[in-house]
Image (cartoon, rainbow, N blue to C red; front, top):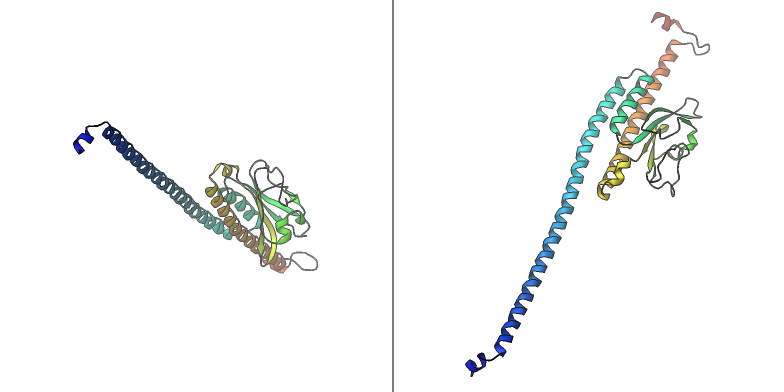
Length: 248
């Protein structure tokens, strides 16, 4: 009976059905395998992006530490405020090659701020402005503006593209602000992947804190040394040179 049934037409349909089921199962298996491979590839690409971002960050930190060390040595060897100003202007262009920036120092009368170093085109800030024009100096802490339409923009800032933010960092010396470091976020960061852009912005902010602290302390020490030198060679009441100056 089985042989008679096998000779019939039904066995062909059964065989075709079995082949169709087998092909469907194989297709599902291949599809699942391809999906897993795509997921694994996506995870590998994400891990590669993170590794690349970390490598860039490490290389940037090594470069920044080297430049910071060079600037600290030059500031330590400076004999006057004018020499220090020249060092600051030169070294900060190397530390922040893509950003526009400025270093502004509070005057002796404390009624205006003056830029002693400017880099980038066009200049990112006014050369002379009132201390209250800067939110960072007024608050005594870093002021970051990522959206010029939503944030509190300092009055001394100008030539700021709408898609680029900035930061101002007060330079402190013995708990007293002596000036600010102003940086505008580099335009090339807008073209970077979001993760790399975030890391670069964070790195720039950390570097700005360190640089502002170094410059503030160096300028305060130089001004103190200069004041002591003047007091030691001039009469306090008349301002005339004294005997020590004559001996020198």
